[in-house]
Length: 161
Image (cartoon, rainbow, N blue to C red):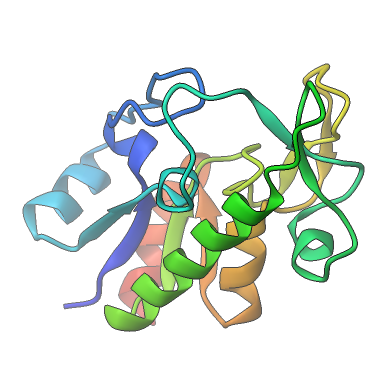
């Protein structure tokens, strides 16, 4: 049975930078969990960051630029945390390869997991089009990434592919 990668915070794990979760209440997610098809993952924790941790944003770019070495992920005080984000993205990719995962549902706006938008690096919660580091790397390797607002579409994609 095909598995799906899901952000741990969406499954209720308190792994976000502020020590909270973004737990989803969703029947499709419940069915996938009952079928043991979900692989839970937090790239920021896997990359070595703690909970809680300082909020981080990609500086005036997106995950593709970070992967290409053209942008950085920094905290508001200027600490460069790029290597943690890259390490977590690599671990997500390795996990997808291990379980032959082709679909992921990741947390929108996150500098790791954003699929259509990320914050712009100003720490004013200003969203800009783009993807997080993990999403960008997964997409570069043929994995389709959805956000939590697209769970129904992700489930359809999982069934059809």
